Amino acid sequence: MYLIIGASGYLGRYCIKNILENTDEKILATYSEKDKPVFQDSRLEWQPLDVCNVDALKALSARIDGKTKIIYLAAFHHPDKVEELPELAWNINIIALANAVNLFGKAKCLYYSSTDTVYGEGSKDRKFVETDPYAPVNLYGKHKALAEQICLTKGFNVVRFPFIFGTSLVEGRPHFFDNIKADLEKGKVVEMFADSYRSTLSFNQCAYYLIALIEKFGACQEKVVNIAESLVEMESELKSVNDELKNHKLNEFANACDSAGQKMENFGKKMSVVSAGIAAIGAASVASFKELDEGYDTI
Image 1 (cartoon, helix red, strand yellow):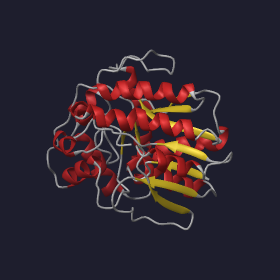
Image 2 (cartoon, rainbow, N blue to C red; image 1 turned 90 degrees about the vertical axis):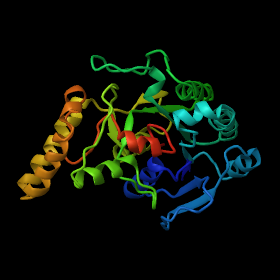
Image 3 (spheres, one colour; image 1 turned 135 degrees about the vertical axis):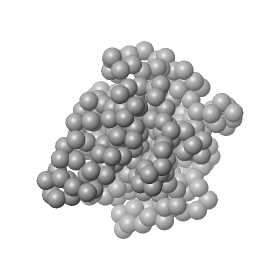
């Protein structure tokens, strides 16, 4: 059985999708919202959970055994909100996590979802590696760095994700990618950030790689794993997608995708030319970012 803590967000929903598609496992998925998520499946059980409630964590731990594979996604994400509400963020990101890992020791494995922001500022000239030192530039990054150490001290695993984007699977809750895509399809100009260098993957890719890692290794001996892809590799992959579309006579769609990429060519000179209709690689719409209630990775 998979137990996903904080499964109702963007990445959580893609984890559910990939578990259902690529394994025979059942899923116990927790959510914190008032309303139960809409998506249902015969192998999926939704359970409300306040991670700050120790009694609720204890009750949940009773369902964990030596075959349980845990993915811990719950966090207070938005960097600005972490600064505004430091006590709440600390309780969710640090205290609740410490209680959870202390109670979930019977599990086969636990993977904590972290971020490349623990490294600090990125550069186009060098890729981060797992052994690089921490250098977070904001409180959110500092929380993630400390949370990693809590999990590692208990013998669990950490996966560091890059900038993540993609189409939302959460009913009634579009991702900023969806907003950017809609604007581009309407021919609108999209303002982009161009002063940040980040690797990037889609939600689906991140979830796929994470589930594949768990299925192959369980508790991986490499306790910290970066899940990322270089911009050059991503650009090559997107070009291949467009070429394949054209091979199947979908020229109109593929050309439209190329056109969408060209709308951000100035940004692309610094990061990666966007194609295949995938909006901002390593960036986001300024307007959309202001509306986000979760951080860069929306985990």
